[in-house]
Image 1 (tube, rainbow over the protein chains, first blue to last red):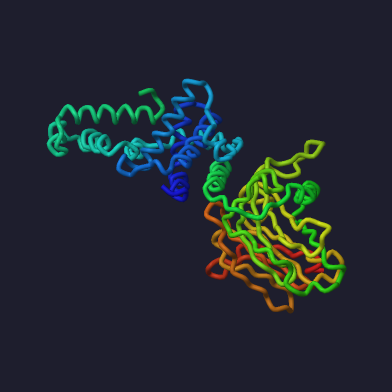
Image 2: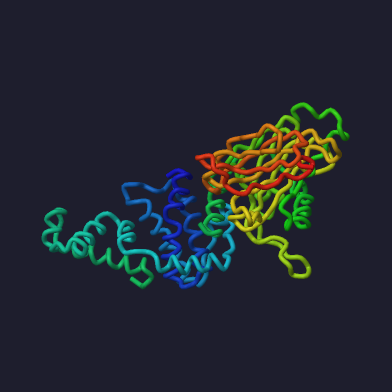
Length: 167
Length: 247
């Protein structure tokens, strides 16, 4: 992925990711730290991205998920990638804090669905939005019904996590 | 886009697109920052680019430095500003020589009595790369909230003037600033004078607005500057130019 593609990824996803991280942390300052660190890490690791492993947004949310886990474990947001790139995390104004709170309420499940790995996205969409039976989906996908159930389960767990709850 | 998101985008862009450039000493811009501290509440900051001895022989192209390309990020270590800066426009004027407009962030500043000198937001700077005189730095600028850059009555529209000489008669004044994205033309009019019209240049994707730098030979009494939209409608009431253009 080129630097320009990372910047485009930022323009397309920064606010939604901020909303996700705001919901997950309940703290605009922490969410801002994690947004900055996530995109800095994406910039550092951009050449390791492989399209066959999933959508760019999936890859990005994977990074954010790791950063979020680190924050939960350590109690502070790391800044390794930011330091490596010399990126300053901009200070939050009162308006920014209000915007983070607003973004936390904005994300829809359909938006988040697009960020799931393709097999989970297909399974969740077919089961929950199209109301198809597990068996039908399994036949269409050429896998077992158990595999479809597992994909739906994992997809829903991932969605719950992105909405702000624990998986 | 809020200040946080646009500022972080600028940081990311800097990390991705940093280009090698000629070093600029940190001390060079301190004088300009001091000027801003004193005058930020005013709409106009005239730059301090000295002429070659007051009415001397500065009528030729000045200097040989090339401006940085639009989109160049100037690292904080090479910038005299509070933060790294982004080049949003550039050009060359007959007397002033090569110039570029730079944007940096500011945390704002308060006077000792607590009054706001300027708000947190952005500063827009004119950087004359090879000012004719050796005594002063070729930077001047204005700071303010992101949308207005301090020009509250005409958000998104700013004008400032850079002098090529302190003592009259000034040979050229560079009128420069920002206009909204929808501006198609920037026009200077004065009674009884032929109008000057230029097409503003797009800035980089990472910072809003379009930018202009218009070399003007003074005097033009009563001159005002305004921007026009795609249908030729004035974008604002216009802003009067300052001496020595409009005496």
